[in-house]
Image 1 (cartoon, one colour):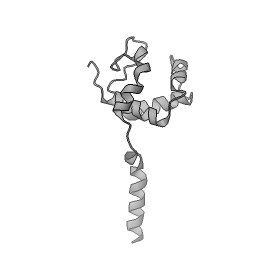
Image 2 (tube, helix red, strand yellow; image 1 turned 180 degrees about the horizontal axis):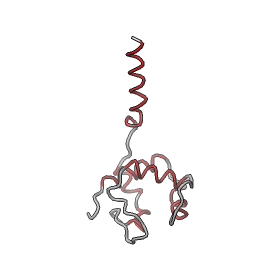
Image 3 (cartoon, one colour; image 1 turned 30 degrees about the vertical axis):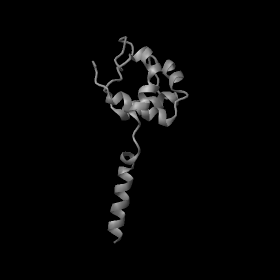
Image 4 (cartoon, one colour; image 1 turned 135 degrees about the vertical axis):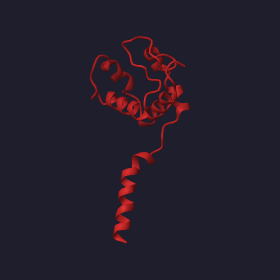
Length: 107
């Protein structure tokens, strides 16, 4: 009985990130309008200086935006992104991640 409970608890802990609600791509599409200035209307960058967001993994976009929001991420355009991400909520970030991950590069 103890082993069964331990196994169930372990599985719940390991699967917890998967059980979290994913972002809403439709809400993310609306929230992505300011991103289009640098990252293009469909997540394909207008300049080689900015990365394409279309087709990126949702978890990567979420992680990157949270790192920009906390100003932990540094690099070429980090200061621009700090300002863009500063007022994003966790829900906004999840929605943006869901949206950009559904796009296909070159659409």
